[in-house]
Length: 627
Image (cartoon, rainbow, N blue to C red; front, top):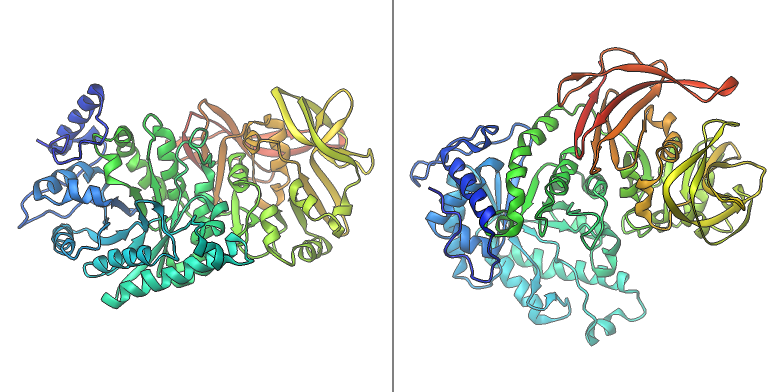
């Protein structure tokens, strides 16, 4: 029988309610019997230390578990507790453990060695982990005591492990007199990003290698990308310094958690920062901290890691996935979905495709706009350098990090290509040649309405009623040249939402963002369809339907759709009419799909497209594949 509540857990931890206690008691009994849910074939965990059985593995995924120092103390230090913890986490089919050390005491070395040796004997990889924080929170990188504490922790780890991962507390918010003096006339972003890179090299990487020259140190980047440089993270500086890179997803509950990060951003973080790291990209890191009651939002993080094809998925952490932590209520659903994650990972075929979006390293722009674009069905392909070759590309305020931006944009248009700009970026480019592409009569303030007008072709524009008013920055344009693909309509005027203007040999598209970026994914479907149509030629496919559904194309014949809405979503994939009309399947449920030709618009400007339609249930994922 597996003990549900470890008697050595600290009394300060929250207690589990009786109902969940019974649920987890039943869960643990099934684990002990090797019959969890009947859906995961488990290799029995033998408890004899002299003959441990090899742990089961997934065919297409590599999973790992982070154990904080408290987790190590309460779940792994005693052999009996360790055996129970391994049985409890067996359904995750872990390949690796990361063990944190929060002490500089050399006596910890023997304990960590004993635990690591036992885990390795059972077939697990084991690495060390450090959280560079103190009782006062983030460290001061000008404080000798903080730097000595950091050195002591990593040197203990280096005596045991050949690999150490650094939790995302490798930042600083310190404003002490020494930090202000050191900053001088620099911005906090420039000063702290330089300071943390220099001090972490000296007191973390070099300190560890003094003890163990073989040790490799992995940096884990946090999900709050817009605050990186201001608080000391600098991907361009630090990725070359470290031996490996782990990228945080941690979108948690996007609408209520204090960071409000759209779920699709987790995918972009992997493709953006992980892709820039190349062979140094080691893992995605996600957690369920304070996510009790939000099972779907928790597994949504895992889906982003799977779809980005991360080399390893790290679950943070053992303590919050294990009773009596309230967030452990997510664990049964996670286990239930693990076979689906592995199955989809094995079916993905071909390179991920998307729309080039210019995101230089260290850039700051409209908050997580790349995530919101993904949430309206625009697949993103982040580019850290200027995308010169694609037919269409997206540019946001993040692009301003590139000092040659205005000239490069103009060169794209001169070459016959298209640029898709956000209205805030075009405002920042005021005075450049591209700012002359639109005849803006007046701007400033905001405008609200629940009525839109959306064009399907040159002369065919239809009214679109929304369920509620939306607020946009006010852009009023002249009648000619007529550029409003989508307008917000009131009794006094039409105001620009999506603008499309031919200029030189190319085209300039401008998207006016709602006052609240989250409202992008709640715009009426015809408005979103018009935005997606801007990229139809580039992708050869476009999504039709409501927001909150993401599209992930792979190769030339696979399309993953993920409904992140609380209700069902009727969606369709639209292709050029020459697309084959037979042989389409939804592979997650092995269903044949119906293909139909549809006519868009009327009269001489009507056009035809091929449509593959389906209905997705809440938080359902589908893999649509052509023959």
